[in-house]
Length: 466
Image (cartoon, rainbow, N blue to C red; front, side, top):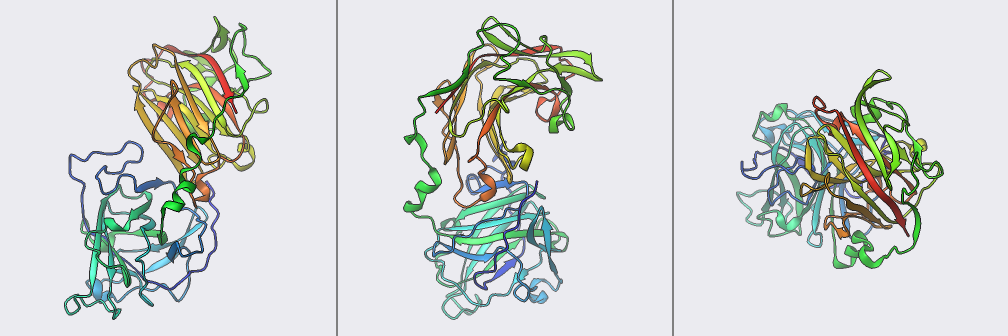
């Protein structure tokens, strides 16, 4: 994945002190399946796992106060090592997937000495992108008071606010934290320093990478821009469909076959060979039937089918409805999905992918709905009720310029994917996409195939409205 770096100068010379302190999730908090984040009240909904740091577009107005988004020599320097138990910490600029970040060799009271305090009383959120080798930490914001000096033993005007989190190590995250969640931060007029510290392991062994540190102000007036059009858009005109009324092979004016094994099992380690054989793909009894089978073919142990509309039908915005019954067998990974029509020119995942519905090979009691983009993915799941492979259901999406809403049997999932206000790598969904239907065997979501012999996905119709 290539993410272009937006070279921006620092807006003001502020302060950053980075250190790391332990705070573990309690054992009964559990793990969020979508992103592996502890599901404590502190972290759910304000953290997001990324595949790499992001290049952001600044909003140069009074709604943001930036601390850092690109390296500036002469501003960054290690703080006095004696403040951090005498251990020396160094930093450097590091390029990660085209984005420049600050890399610290140890998190022992390191960062940027403040040039001046700033007034964040009008800001509502603190934002940071980071990765560390520690799992448990806290973030501390300090207000230095009117004299601009941090002397808590002598200055009752100094206050600190603490926000504790626990996240898996060695992953990129973006935090978007309401400032009022920083317990103890009773004043915000003279912000002087940001601190992170860990006690889980020796601070001299903890490494960290940070980027995109800023405060933001979100008001009621800014909410509609982030939420998007929602139910205000109605798609009632049928612009394309296949009812699968004519038996035999799929309509060649609408569908093409993907053939073979792709690159490393179509990028997922899939075990099957996709064919155009009628045993794998056929129209019968008013249904499209895609069948995955255990059989030796072209040096593979399984065959299956994968159809797409690339070069024959693409669209931008609208409602998709697919009435389908999913395969029941363990080891099968069915998918009804979409890809950006510009995939060949800009690659995946920058082209964007919308998974209308998927199902894991080892969990047939759950349905998955996901969007993929250059900076990562956003997924949600619901119970299937045990009927996904025994009954037909209508899976769908509504796709507008601001929002993607997933649906099943006409009911909309509450957890929609909304266009971010500034993250340019997280919304490639403003260009045409095409449709795909397939069953994979094994691979990253297919799971164990040892007992698999044969299973089918049946599709009654595919309809697109605008």
